[in-house]
Image (tube, rainbow over all chains, first blue to last red; front, top):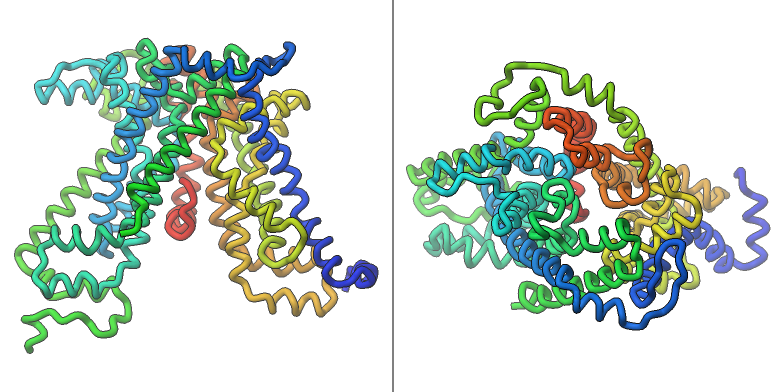
Amino acid sequence: MVALPTIRRRRVRGPSAREAGTALLFVLPFLVLFALFRFGPAIAGVVLGFTDYTIGGDTGFVGVDNFRRLADDPTFWSALRVTVVFTALSVPMSMLASLGTALLTRRAFRGAKVFRSVFFLPVVTSLVLAGVVFSWVFADGGPWSRAMGALGLPQQSWLADSVLVVPALVLVAVWSRFGYGMLILLARLQEIPAELEEAALTDGASAWQRFRYVTLPQLRPALFFVAVIETTVAVQVFDMIYVMTGGGPVRASYSLVYLLYDQGFKYFDLGYASAIGVALFVMTIVVALIQRLTLGREE
Amino acid sequence: MTDTIVPAAPVAAPAAAPTRRRRPYRVGRAGRGWLATRTALLLVGAAITLFPFYAMVVLSFKPTGPVTFPDSLLPWPFSTEAYDQVIGAKSVLRWMWNTVVYSVVSVVGVLLFASMAGYAFAKKRFPGKEAMFWSFLAMLMVPYHVTMIPTFIIISELGGVDTYWGMIVPTLANAQAVFLMRQFIASLPDSLFEAARLDGCSEWRVYVSIVLPLIKPILATLGVFVFLWHWNDFLWPLIVGQSLDMRTLTTGIASLQQENVALNMLLAGSVVAFVPIFTAYLIGQRYFQEGVATTGIKG
């Protein structure tokens, strides 16, 4: 009623033009933001990888120089190795924990909701806070080294050891992420028709057989989804490393995103940092394809 | 009588979960053993999950001094010294304010622009709609770190470094939010909007008084997650908020940690940063958990 004049004006242009016009007005604010801070930067990010852009300096195209430099940079290869090892360890372990807690809290028993809430709590907790606490947990003389000592293993700080530092970070990652996968798997478990398991039970299938041949195949799409999300998260690991080790000892926990951050925002070599970003992008695509071909295949 | 010996699959189970709980074969001795095992496993899992939170709180209430394990895990000696120092001498309250501004303004902005765009994408026809939507989808594939560098350059050229708007505006280009909005609004019947339009309501009026009230559930779910992402965000605030006064809680605590501030102070800062998100989690648990379960939104 308030806006009658507008409607009368637009009716002249015909209904579809009017509809398109108002629709575009609704999309416009987001579209501008998206073009300016997402679409444009995505293209610019790739283009910058082929320049020697530094803040305040002259910029020129340098072809594939940045990528040649990357290939010759031992720091890049070590960061890549750290990232791959971290991802390869943390994703399966976190998924196992997700699966375990999902199966344990699957039925509606008293306290099931409380356990689910507890297991999800680390997911809403900042990795900076987690990093501060876990620095103490893994410190020399802290709970973890004492526990290792009690098991007869050398009592030492895992964060100060160049071999054990990545496993320590993996444990933090598992703690922080498994609750997310648990909720995804629980949602799927709840949808599995009870008849399937009842039928397997009447056929005399053992608990393991029921899990292996009935539940697990039904969970497959959800597991694939969790694997994809967790891999993206793991490949971009940065926050907790920044807080817990600073990439050390001697680059033993220096990840790709850490390298990108240092090159771009400590040395302001934004061209080189962008090339690292492109490498990260390529790696994401390769991993996504591998997952699609293995986990995501149709049976 | 035979029913109790051979468990038959219920022909039409009204609600799956309760029916399964009452299944006769669950009551046997093996069933009881399994229940005990399950409870034990869950308790161990919950203890491991909660231990870092316990340590964070207890150690933050210690006088400054060496932290030994396990006796420092006792609640005494008790001291609020760390809180006095971290709130008095350090800028924690200022960082808290920055974090509130960053999170709250972003939530409002994302919800507004994403719901407007989502409404148009769900219910309107306009030229370029498909192309826009596909470009949103394609951009989800590009890792954030690729777009981060050009976005920083843009913000830096516009003079947005160390400002609230420089920190907030780029995060409003959230394509995932538009997807969720579009999906939700598409499920609402067209007749609701048509009736208002026939009554002569302007499109803006339809959006404000019909669309917005109808999409409250998705606004709540999405709002909770956008708040969480911003509250815990690290890398972007680290890059844009460079001065002491423009740090958020996460980047501020990380900077304290790099100054080698005592553990009790770091943990006191962490508790201050954790309490708001923990309270939000306690109140909005349903939205967090259902949000993950129904939309797969990244925690």
